[in-house]
Amino acid sequence: MKNPKRSANSWAVRALYGVVFVFLLGAGLRWASYHSYFHIATVDVVNVHAGEPLRYVDKQKLFDTVKPYLSGSSFYVDLDAAQETARRFTWVSDVKIERTSYNTITLTVKEHEPVARWVRQGHTAGLVDADGQIFQADFDAPLPEFDGTAEDQPQMVTQYRSFSNELKPLRLQILRLQYTPRSSWSMMLNNGIELRLGKQEVNTRMNRFVNAWQHSLREKALQLDYVDMRYPDGFATRNRARAAGSATEALEMALAADRVGEEEAASAPNSDDLPN
Image (cartoon, rainbow, N blue to C red; front, side):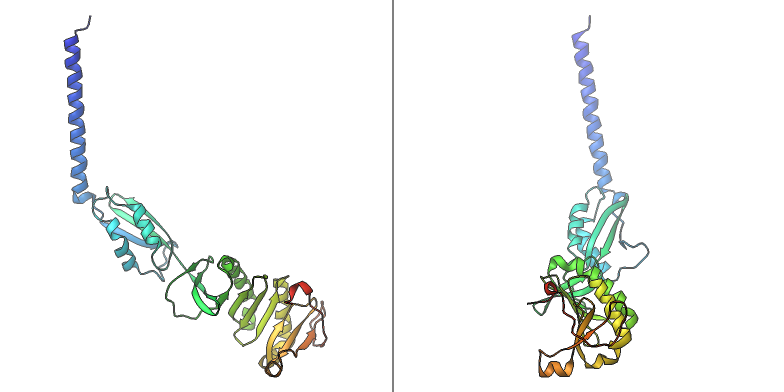
């Protein structure tokens, strides 16, 4: 038969040991939290593309911004708050903040890569990055203008790259790309010519423009106001001199579907591809 008094003493001893253990554990953690060995010694700011320097983000300013959340003991750093703050920093598209060792924290930064200026009603409203995201930052270098809704910017970036690749061999560049609510594409080129592609088979129409430019339009570039590719087998042009005199006059040039020629004709456009 067990001795109740001995059992009570045994329980009291175990409880005492437990209290002592918790006390020592707390004291140890407290000591560790204040010991310099466990303080954050390094905060690295690196590009998401390993080995490449950051081109737009000011590393020192970003470090100063997140420093209040990443200073002192590694037990008390606030990685979530630091990450949320860093994501609002100029030129930062995204950032991942993680503890890479007991006293080192690494910020892996994805930068906004500017592709164009976003314009609304004739005014610059922001910058567009390579993912089609709109962001705010100061940037003085030349960029093309994108005129379209915010939701259309990813598609405009993709189409801009495709059009630019087609135009590059011709030494032509897009100064302004427009995508209207009716899903119609047009652009102003660096030689002052407006190119209209409409909304149907725009890549095929761009290819026809490239062929026409090489065979006939290049010679007339200084005279042209616009080139309208919204025709089944050809295109229409308007001379700048005529455009100044009358906005309704146009010189229509038709190209055979299987060859590029200089025969002038009126080729009716698709009714659903032209404005009323």
